[in-house]
Length: 473
Image (cartoon, rainbow, N blue to C red; front, side, top):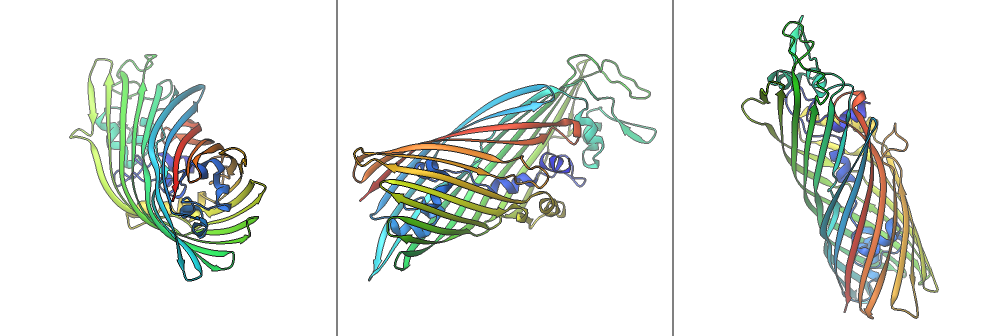
């Protein structure tokens, strides 16, 4: 339960004031979900075993020197998520959509004497943070109980006249039977301007390097409500405070982050003619600087139409800045080509327990202990294929991949499965349009507030559609 509380209670549990950081802030930066290109997206992570166009800048820069001509590319994507929450006996579905340019790139082959090389520069959408969900149900406790248990939030309950001191102890009459609803809207993205080079160092062996300059934003908007729709709490006990004429409670919490960072990738690739490719890619830790604004307001309404707000003198707000570093990522990719069919596979590993917060308050840096205890290494594997029909100007692609859980104590939580497929249509020998569709599923658990009986599950199903224009000249 400790991990569930850490994930969702960042705005509520800091005794010295509001705190808006939690482990998911690190995971969000360490687990990119971008497509990079429609072709790579259709094949999936296994594309690192092929890596012979602009997307090699991300998957394995050693493959850039396989691009035979100058290449110009432009891609767009549609991202759709459907989140189903399960709280007690209630299921709630919420959909969200976002559209974006996911890649603009240029690759140019070079030659230094007898040495072949290539340089590339471009923009990539590394991650799309859009992720909305809603949960509703009738709980067996109230969020006010978690407030009075936290010194940093006790004043909030008092301002709303939902708690009082009885025999030297803070109490609230609010408990079970309330209709509870939480809606969370997340938006933003992580962008990268990258430049790289691939160069042959021996016959059929190349190396590569990419430098990524990163920027982005993240917004979190949570609206939480409790309503006494069964009129359980209908009179004010002025002696023992065992009851109160409560009608409804509305809480709103917001977080807005500005993100900047830097990272790099190194790769090596060996080839046996056109039959086989084998590559290794190492992505270094990325270092991010984050500036964050956050706020919280609450309003309580009573049966006699009295309304109280907290804080009394305006929204409770604050501003933080801190740094996050992500772990190394190690990837190996392999592909075989025979009679127009290319089969590829890859394995990737990163130790997410090495995510680290720094340059901030002690309370925030203390999360590094929770990260080390709760997170673990993630293994991601992928298998993909590409078939070029010799008699038709069409290329077909498909892939399947999966990733293990990132948590020590939840063997299935945050696992993901990705199925993808796509095709490329040649309008001319040097002009192609690629299209792809991918469907990713995963599940996780959250809590409404700091209570074991306020947890719920989220089943996430996201779909990605992408189109890519490729021109070689």
